[in-house]
Image (cartoon, rainbow, N blue to C red):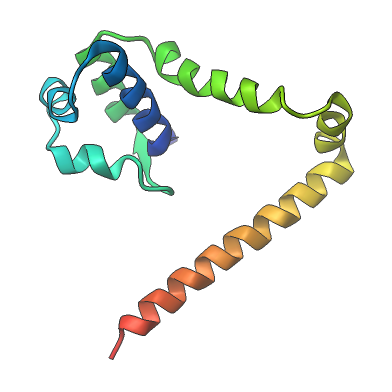
Length: 124
């Protein structure tokens, strides 16, 4: 089974790590063994990484997997804390999940259609 991890989450961790350790993107790339364009592509929405990429970062920077995901978990908890408890209860109810799923499906459909339109515009 292929474990995939959203690249944007790794990018957020690396940006925080860089800031805390006063490092440039190039220095991170040198440590991990990447070319700088690879680092830049991490922040593109919809990109996914396999577990070996995460393990490479973990080893090169001497951090734990928990360190990597904690950055993003804390942000999620901060976002969730902005909603009233009643709203969170509704969000995890069958009705709430149905509406959230419907809304997300519509969002993804619009994004996909925009990408199709963009590609079709480039075709001769």
